[in-house]
Image 1: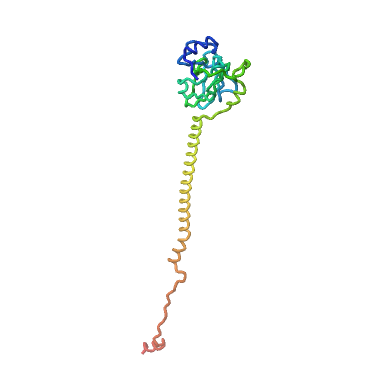
Image 2 (image 1 turned 45 degrees about the vertical axis):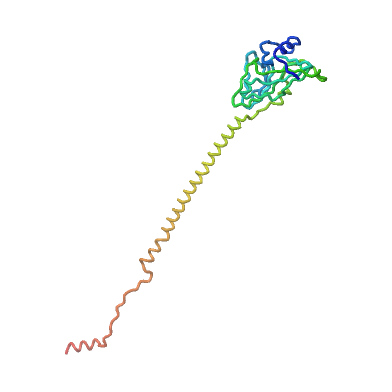
Length: 256
Protein backbone atom coordinates (compact mmCIF):
# COMPACT_ATOMS: atom_id res chain seq x y z
CA UNK A 1 0.00 0.00 0.00
CA UNK A 2 1.40 3.37 -1.01
CA UNK A 3 -0.14 6.72 -0.12
CA UNK A 4 -0.61 9.27 -2.87
CA UNK A 5 1.44 12.43 -2.81
CA UNK A 6 0.01 15.85 -3.59
CA UNK A 7 0.72 15.64 -7.34
CA UNK A 8 -0.92 12.23 -7.60
CA UNK A 9 -4.04 13.53 -5.81
CA UNK A 10 -4.27 16.45 -8.25
CA UNK A 11 -3.81 14.21 -11.28
CA UNK A 12 -6.39 11.62 -10.22
CA UNK A 13 -8.94 14.22 -9.15
CA UNK A 14 -8.76 15.84 -12.59
CA UNK A 15 -8.68 12.55 -14.51
CA UNK A 16 -11.39 10.65 -12.59
CA UNK A 17 -13.43 13.45 -11.02
CA UNK A 18 -12.75 12.11 -7.55
CA UNK A 19 -13.64 15.33 -5.70
CA UNK A 20 -16.48 17.65 -6.74
CA UNK A 21 -16.25 20.61 -6.58
CA UNK A 22 -12.51 20.32 -6.94
CA UNK A 23 -10.26 23.20 -5.88
CA UNK A 24 -6.60 22.71 -6.56
CA UNK A 25 -5.44 24.86 -3.65
CA UNK A 26 -7.07 22.42 -1.21
CA UNK A 27 -4.79 19.59 -2.35
CA UNK A 28 -1.83 20.05 -0.03
CA UNK A 29 0.64 18.06 2.06
CA UNK A 30 -0.34 14.72 0.49
CA UNK A 31 -4.00 15.22 1.44
CA UNK A 32 -7.11 17.09 0.33
CA UNK A 33 -8.81 19.49 2.74
CA UNK A 34 -12.59 19.12 2.76
CA UNK A 35 -15.06 21.81 3.80
CA UNK A 36 -18.09 21.70 6.13
CA UNK A 37 -21.21 20.97 4.11
CA UNK A 38 -24.66 22.50 4.09
CA UNK A 39 -26.22 20.03 6.56
CA UNK A 40 -25.55 19.61 10.27
CA UNK A 41 -27.23 18.17 13.32
CA UNK A 42 -26.15 19.04 16.88
CA UNK A 43 -27.54 17.33 19.99
CA UNK A 44 -29.31 19.62 22.48
CA UNK A 45 -29.75 22.26 19.80
CA UNK A 46 -32.74 21.12 17.76
CA UNK A 47 -34.67 18.05 16.76
CA UNK A 48 -34.23 18.57 13.03
CA UNK A 49 -31.31 18.77 10.66
CA UNK A 50 -29.97 22.27 10.13
CA UNK A 51 -29.56 23.39 6.54
CA UNK A 52 -26.76 25.89 6.46
CA UNK A 53 -26.40 28.88 4.22
CA UNK A 54 -23.07 29.92 2.72
CA UNK A 55 -20.89 31.32 5.49
CA UNK A 56 -23.27 30.25 8.26
CA UNK A 57 -21.69 28.99 11.46
CA UNK A 58 -22.10 25.65 13.22
CA UNK A 59 -21.80 25.76 17.02
CA UNK A 60 -21.05 22.55 18.93
CA UNK A 61 -21.40 23.02 22.71
CA UNK A 62 -19.07 21.20 25.14
CA UNK A 63 -19.99 17.57 25.66
CA UNK A 64 -22.36 17.43 22.69
CA UNK A 65 -22.39 15.25 19.58
CA UNK A 66 -22.83 16.46 16.05
CA UNK A 67 -23.28 15.19 12.52
CA UNK A 68 -21.39 17.19 9.91
CA UNK A 69 -21.25 16.67 6.18
CA UNK A 70 -18.66 17.64 3.60
CA UNK A 71 -19.17 20.25 0.93
CA UNK A 72 -17.52 17.97 -1.61
CA UNK A 73 -18.77 14.75 -3.15
CA UNK A 74 -16.11 12.07 -2.94
CA UNK A 75 -15.38 9.19 -5.28
CA UNK A 76 -12.88 6.49 -4.31
CA UNK A 77 -11.76 4.22 -7.20
CA UNK A 78 -12.00 0.46 -6.65
CA UNK A 79 -8.19 0.36 -6.86
CA UNK A 80 -7.75 2.65 -3.86
CA UNK A 81 -8.88 3.26 -0.29
CA UNK A 82 -9.20 6.58 1.54
CA UNK A 83 -8.59 7.66 5.14
CA UNK A 84 -10.25 10.62 6.82
CA UNK A 85 -9.62 12.76 9.89
CA UNK A 86 -10.11 16.23 11.36
CA UNK A 87 -7.53 18.96 10.92
CA UNK A 88 -5.27 19.46 13.92
CA UNK A 89 -6.28 23.12 14.30
CA UNK A 90 -9.85 22.07 15.07
CA UNK A 91 -8.93 18.81 16.79
CA UNK A 92 -6.85 20.68 19.37
CA UNK A 93 -10.00 22.56 20.40
CA UNK A 94 -11.50 19.23 21.47
CA UNK A 95 -13.43 18.12 18.39
CA UNK A 96 -13.13 14.35 18.08
CA UNK A 97 -14.14 12.17 15.13
CA UNK A 98 -16.20 9.27 16.52
CA UNK A 99 -17.28 7.85 13.18
CA UNK A 100 -15.29 5.69 10.76
CA UNK A 101 -11.74 6.59 9.78
CA UNK A 102 -11.67 5.19 6.25
CA UNK A 103 -13.71 5.34 3.06
CA UNK A 104 -14.39 2.11 1.19
CA UNK A 105 -13.24 1.50 -2.39
CA UNK A 106 -16.02 2.38 -4.81
CA UNK A 107 -17.75 4.89 -2.47
CA UNK A 108 -19.35 7.89 -4.11
CA UNK A 109 -21.14 10.66 -2.20
CA UNK A 110 -20.78 13.27 0.50
CA UNK A 111 -19.07 12.15 3.69
CA UNK A 112 -20.77 12.27 7.10
CA UNK A 113 -18.69 12.87 10.20
CA UNK A 114 -20.00 12.01 13.64
CA UNK A 115 -18.11 14.32 16.00
CA UNK A 116 -17.95 14.99 19.73
CA UNK A 117 -16.83 18.15 21.52
CA UNK A 118 -14.57 16.89 24.29
CA UNK A 119 -13.35 20.39 25.11
CA UNK A 120 -14.54 22.89 27.69
CA UNK A 121 -15.66 25.58 25.22
CA UNK A 122 -17.96 25.84 22.24
CA UNK A 123 -16.41 24.86 18.92
CA UNK A 124 -17.50 27.10 16.07
CA UNK A 125 -16.93 26.28 12.41
CA UNK A 126 -18.14 28.03 9.27
CA UNK A 127 -19.96 26.43 6.41
CA UNK A 128 -17.36 25.35 3.80
CA UNK A 129 -14.51 25.89 6.27
CA UNK A 130 -11.60 23.47 5.82
CA UNK A 131 -12.15 21.13 8.75
CA UNK A 132 -11.66 17.60 7.40
CA UNK A 133 -8.81 15.87 5.56
CA UNK A 134 -8.72 12.86 3.23
CA UNK A 135 -5.77 10.71 2.11
CA UNK A 136 -5.70 8.12 -0.65
CA UNK A 137 -3.70 4.92 -0.93
CA UNK A 138 -3.34 2.26 -3.64
CA UNK A 139 -4.56 -1.29 -3.15
CA UNK A 140 -2.46 -4.21 -4.38
CA UNK A 141 -5.36 -5.16 -6.65
CA UNK A 142 -8.89 -4.11 -7.57
CA UNK A 143 -11.34 -4.57 -4.67
CA UNK A 144 -13.62 -7.55 -5.36
CA UNK A 145 -16.43 -6.06 -3.27
CA UNK A 146 -16.54 -2.30 -3.84
CA UNK A 147 -19.01 -0.06 -1.99
CA UNK A 148 -22.44 -0.47 -3.64
CA UNK A 149 -23.83 2.39 -5.67
CA UNK A 150 -26.33 4.56 -3.80
CA UNK A 151 -29.37 6.44 -4.95
CA UNK A 152 -29.11 10.21 -4.84
CA UNK A 153 -30.93 11.46 -1.75
CA UNK A 154 -32.34 14.89 -1.00
CA UNK A 155 -30.77 14.94 2.48
CA UNK A 156 -27.37 13.54 3.34
CA UNK A 157 -28.18 13.23 7.07
CA UNK A 158 -31.01 10.73 7.38
CA UNK A 159 -33.54 10.29 10.18
CA UNK A 160 -31.73 7.09 11.11
CA UNK A 161 -28.49 9.05 11.53
CA UNK A 162 -30.22 11.56 13.78
CA UNK A 163 -31.95 8.91 15.90
CA UNK A 164 -28.58 7.39 16.76
CA UNK A 165 -27.26 10.48 18.51
CA UNK A 166 -30.26 12.65 19.33
CA UNK A 167 -31.21 13.49 22.89
CA UNK A 168 -29.68 15.51 25.68
CA UNK A 169 -26.11 14.58 26.47
CA UNK A 170 -24.68 15.56 29.86
CA UNK A 171 -21.31 17.12 29.22
CA UNK A 172 -18.43 16.78 31.71
CA UNK A 173 -18.64 20.52 32.32
CA UNK A 174 -22.38 20.28 33.07
CA UNK A 175 -21.84 17.28 35.33
CA UNK A 176 -19.15 19.19 37.24
CA UNK A 177 -21.51 22.14 37.58
CA UNK A 178 -24.25 19.85 38.92
CA UNK A 179 -21.81 18.30 41.40
CA UNK A 180 -20.70 21.74 42.62
CA UNK A 181 -24.31 22.83 43.08
CA UNK A 182 -25.13 19.67 45.03
CA UNK A 183 -22.04 20.15 47.19
CA UNK A 184 -23.03 23.74 48.02
CA UNK A 185 -26.59 22.67 48.81
CA UNK A 186 -25.32 19.83 51.02
CA UNK A 187 -22.99 22.19 52.90
CA UNK A 188 -25.90 24.57 53.53
CA UNK A 189 -28.01 21.74 54.94
CA UNK A 190 -25.14 20.54 57.14
CA UNK A 191 -24.64 24.07 58.50
CA UNK A 192 -28.37 24.33 59.15
CA UNK A 193 -28.36 21.04 61.05
CA UNK A 194 -25.30 22.09 63.07
CA UNK A 195 -26.91 25.44 63.91
CA UNK A 196 -30.15 23.72 64.91
CA UNK A 197 -28.25 21.23 67.09
CA UNK A 198 -26.32 24.03 68.79
CA UNK A 199 -29.51 25.98 69.38
CA UNK A 200 -31.21 22.92 70.86
CA UNK A 201 -28.29 22.41 73.23
CA UNK A 202 -28.49 26.01 74.44
CA UNK A 203 -32.25 25.74 74.93
CA UNK A 204 -31.80 22.49 76.86
CA UNK A 205 -29.20 24.10 79.15
CA UNK A 206 -31.47 27.09 79.70
CA UNK A 207 -34.43 24.82 80.48
CA UNK A 208 -32.39 22.81 82.96
CA UNK A 209 -31.30 26.05 84.66
CA UNK A 210 -34.89 27.24 84.95
CA UNK A 211 -36.00 23.89 86.38
CA UNK A 212 -33.20 23.93 88.94
CA UNK A 213 -34.12 27.47 89.97
CA UNK A 214 -37.79 26.54 90.39
CA UNK A 215 -36.84 23.39 92.32
CA UNK A 216 -34.68 25.42 94.71
CA UNK A 217 -37.39 28.03 95.28
CA UNK A 218 -40.07 25.43 95.97
CA UNK A 219 -38.14 23.27 98.48
CA UNK A 220 -35.95 25.89 100.18
CA UNK A 221 -38.77 27.87 102.02
CA UNK A 222 -40.21 24.95 104.05
CA UNK A 223 -36.69 24.01 105.05
CA UNK A 224 -36.01 27.50 106.39
CA UNK A 225 -39.34 27.57 108.25
CA UNK A 226 -38.54 24.30 109.98
CA UNK A 227 -35.28 25.73 111.29
CA UNK A 228 -36.47 29.16 112.60
CA UNK A 229 -39.88 28.14 114.08
CA UNK A 230 -39.92 25.09 116.44
CA UNK A 231 -42.87 22.92 115.96
CA UNK A 232 -43.21 22.07 119.77
CA UNK A 233 -42.18 25.15 121.85
CA UNK A 234 -41.43 24.63 125.58
CA UNK A 235 -43.16 27.18 127.89
CA UNK A 236 -41.25 28.15 131.04
CA UNK A 237 -42.82 26.95 134.27
CA UNK A 238 -42.43 28.61 137.70
CA UNK A 239 -42.61 26.14 140.51
CA UNK A 240 -43.03 27.20 144.13
CA UNK A 241 -40.40 26.07 146.54
CA UNK A 242 -41.74 24.57 149.70
CA UNK A 243 -40.11 26.04 152.82
CA UNK A 244 -41.96 23.88 155.27
CA UNK A 245 -43.47 26.95 157.04
CA UNK A 246 -47.14 27.73 156.69
CA UNK A 247 -48.51 31.16 156.11
CA UNK A 248 -50.31 31.12 159.40
CA UNK A 249 -47.06 30.63 161.22
CA UNK A 250 -45.57 33.60 159.50
CA UNK A 251 -48.48 35.80 160.55
CA UNK A 252 -48.18 34.75 164.20
CA UNK A 253 -44.49 35.43 164.24
CA UNK A 254 -44.96 38.91 162.95
CA UNK A 255 -47.65 39.82 165.54
CA UNK A 256 -45.44 38.69 168.42
